[in-house]
Length: 436
Image 1 (cartoon, one colour):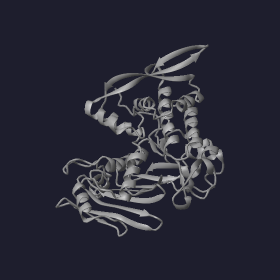
Image 2: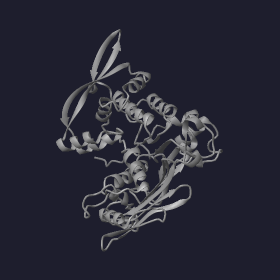
Image 3: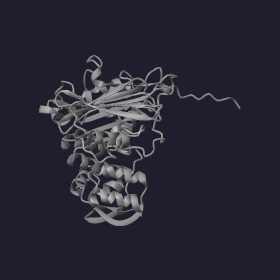
Image 4: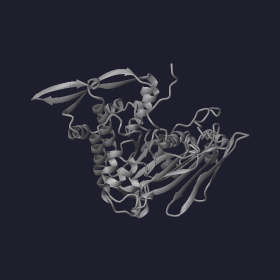
């Protein structure tokens, strides 16, 4: 689970911002929001975080930074002259040429890890990994000579690695690859690198954007019996969609690489099937039919005949199935997209009540959720806002004192009138036009 995520000099983010999931001392909704992890289960981690903000405030960039870190680890570049996805803060002469910095603290298999990297367009300049078991210890430090384009890796005293294995790893870690990415290309075993690679590859999922087509993956998971159809039907039924069954009819179609990447949402999707998709460029998928019982008669509708809201909730029900069954970290941009507010509320409550091993991180514009103090904790609500220098700042609802937020309704009202920030500063409605 993620404890803290840090990002500096990326897109609209100039100074370092920190998105934290370390729960404060509040006991509000303890049973629904808190995961106890680490040695002795002493670390209290929030399993849900929701980020508010105006359009262009940078809230999506925070999620994109998490996605970038995942990609840098799991999808290493093949050639040393391939360019990295480097998008610094451009409204400043210094930062426009400075390195981007990403860092994350997370817990996996009871152990806390701290991972950091610093990079520009051509190179991973610095990289480090620490583990806490229970005391802090170095796994590795990596530096790069950007002139000679050579990386050096040094391991901590608690890490056992032969000289030959270290040479192999350095050889496979191109200057534009992370050490963890280079490790994926080697036939060596280092327990700490294996655990961290497993976390990035199998727990941290690709970002879900509003336009992300998840239904082929959800249907594929149902067809392979990776997902539980009964759970998804139950979620759809309880959301008042009058759907009594999901019927899959197989057919073959062309598949793009981006769609193959999305199959990582289905965990664990068989590697031999993924390889076959990559080889042939085709996949066998099921045509989705939703069975509706209306006036004692059964009607089967194709996916394209269903509403956008039905399709969206079908996809979310599949993600919820994943989060209930297997430890996962799901990142969703504009989670309310195509959903009625009551459906969003139903999905969030279903996650909080039924999932005890996963995390959900999302952005939203749905401010009315703030009126329902009985379903959220202050430390789980975040606000992204542009400052006068046009860079993103991030702060938590828990940062405000009680004089600003006195009761249930005041949170919503305070946000609506701008007391909490993170709202657009809109001008008047008149448009200046030259007289004709």
